[in-house]
Every structure is written in C-alpha cells, then in structure tokens.
Image: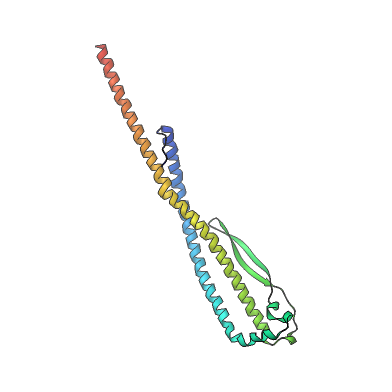
Amino acid sequence: MASVKLTKNELKVQKDKLKRFERYLPTLELKKQQLQTVMMKITVELEEKEKELSNMVDGLDSWVAVFAENKIFEEDKKLQNLVNPQNVVCTEDNIAGVTVPVFKELSFEEIDYDISEYPLWVDEAIFRLRDIAKLNMLLRTLRVQNELLGKELRFTSQRVNLFEKVKIPEAKENIRQIGIYIGDQQTSAVVRGKIAKRKRQEASV
C-alpha cells in the first residue's frame, strides 16, 4: 500500500474517496447481477435452440434418399443454389450498458425455378433448409451476445473485487493511520502546552 500524507487535508481526501467507492460499489454489484441474470437466460435459450437445431437436422434423415437425387442435378440446378441467404436483419439492444445485436430475420433471394425440372420434394426441402439457416443465424447472434456480455461481466467482476478488496480497505486503513497520527499530534500538543504553562508558572514564582 502506498504511503499517504499524514495531514488533515489528506484525511479529507481519503474520506471523500471512501464515500465515492462505497457509493459506486452497489451500482457495480447491481450491474454484475444483471449481467449474470441475462447470461443465464441466454445460456438456457442457446441450449434450447441448439437442441431444436439438432432435431431439425436429425429430421432430415428421412430425406437422405431424396437428397441423394440432388447429385444428379446439373450444377446450376443443385439444391444449394435455390437457398441463397440475402440479408440478415439485426437490431441492437442495450443490456446493462452493453450494446448487443438482436437477430430479427434472415431473408433469402427469391429464385425462380421450373417446377417441372425438379421432383416434388424440392419445395419442402427449401423451406426446411431456410429454417435451419435462420436458426443457425439466431444461434450465432446469441453466441455473440454471450461473448460481449461475458467480457463485460469479467470486467465488472474485476472492478467489484478491486473496490471490495483493495480500494475500500485501503482508504479505511489510510483514514485510520491518519486519524491515529493526528490524534497523537493533538495529544502531544496538549502535553507540550501544559508543560510550557507549568514552566511559565514556575518562572514567575
């Protein structure tokens, strides 16, 4: 701990610091709790959406045979050419002072194709693949949210620990040391004053 000046001015400085630290700490603790709560919700949503995505992909198993037909299509008519993500719509939200992206919609290029050139299952396959793409984008956005909030949570937790374990105890200890020193100085001054008074009295006799 750095040494401090043992003066009344420094005592005021340290007391002001302590008030500021103790006033700011509850705000930091509240922010930490908010971040933890939101991150827990995001974690739950991530688990749910990952499970949903897994089920959607598993649901394609029954399509394996028909998807195999995709191999026989000409290159410019393959199924992946009919599912072309075009625009991701995201907004922003402010969570405990952190700006995070919020997924809204994923649009796709409207591609005209001759239904006579494709089997009947193609329309349904396009819908399913679009749903999977949208869910993937939602998951990606949730992971970004988690990452941004996680960084802020680590920073806030460090600040809380700094205030709780370093700054506040340090200010209190400085106030204690300065108080003891000033008290000793005042006591010494009183004693010196009494001694000087007694000497003057003795000299006048």
